[in-house]
Each structure stands twice: as structure tokens, then as C-alpha cells.
Length: 89
Image (cartoon, rainbow, N blue to C red; front, top):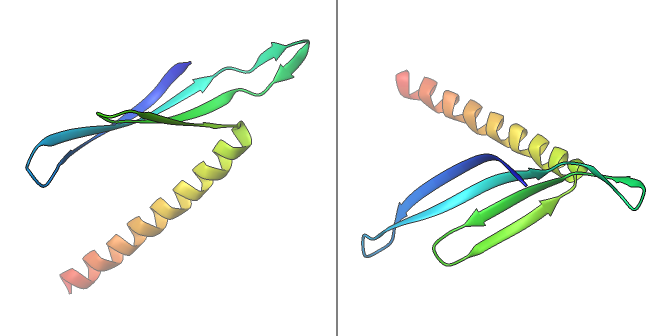
């Protein structure tokens, strides 16, 4: 597996203790298995102080999720721009 990117999120609990969550994006290259080409894998891994959870996605699933993320992010940024314009008036 190749680590492609990592987002580290720090947060404080109610007692003020600092904790870390990590969202890691990994890939596994396509390969030939038993004489047949197989898709690669996109792996989302969420790690924190207590454990790790992973989700393996096919390339098609990863494309579907990425398109949704792009759309949602653009909508949120546009809404923020509208709020800034209203705030400046």
C-alpha cells in the first residue's frame, strides 16, 4: 500500500485533553491475479488513540465518492461567499 495523503485533526475533550484523529488515503496498484487483471484499491483509514477503521473502495466507488465530495465542498464554499457578501453590506 502507498500512502497518498493524510489529514490530521487535533481536538480537545471536555477535560481539555488533546486528542488526534488521522484520515489516511492509501492505494494499492492493480495487479494480475490467477491470470486475470484486478482493479486496484483505494483505502480510507481513520485512526485515533483507540483503534483504526478502514474502508476499501474500488476505483468506481472512489470516483463516485470523490464527485460527491467535490460537489458538496463547492456548495459550502459558495454559501460561505454569500454570507461574506451579506456581512459586508
